[in-house]
Figure 1 (cartoon, rainbow, N blue to C red):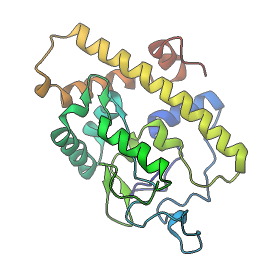
Figure 2: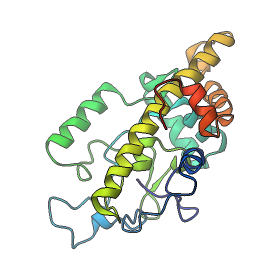
Figure 3: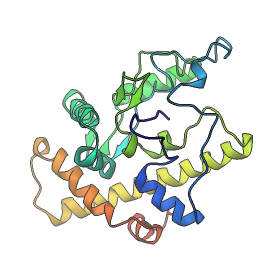
Length: 231
């Protein structure tokens, strides 16, 4: 999880924050120990072998962004964030699918290798394409980050209980992303004439974002995401 520059960051992106606040009856408490803007894992007191590199932080990972988050980033994200999304599409066209922007097979293999070598947060051979190297390192898609990035914290104020909560929420949000992105893709592709692939990404993502904006409450997202969604 890496903070944006604009404000003190909420615990979840705006869309997900509305869903989970409705489910829990209020906003989530902040993880005060996970200081993303001044990464606690990069500090000198962290033992060697556990310390993250200043240049990478926790961003040695390529997130898969569902279509409605891609559309939200292109429609209302920061200029730098939109540029990163478009650059990703141009550089890795194979990552574009009806469901969003995925990681490539090579990126997945490299991520597994980094984990096996215990080099997460230190190996710059794999780097998030949406990372902004400014103000100590920022996230270009912060308001539209996926469930994995939104729920990953290197420190937990409530210890193991907090860690279990965020892990459970990651499972929930990832399931919603999978089902809801499929619903968006089917809604768009089956109800509108199919366009050549090169002409689709921005428009399709925008339509996915608009379709998903109607699912601002858990009841709406549950109907769209299907039976696998269990709040």
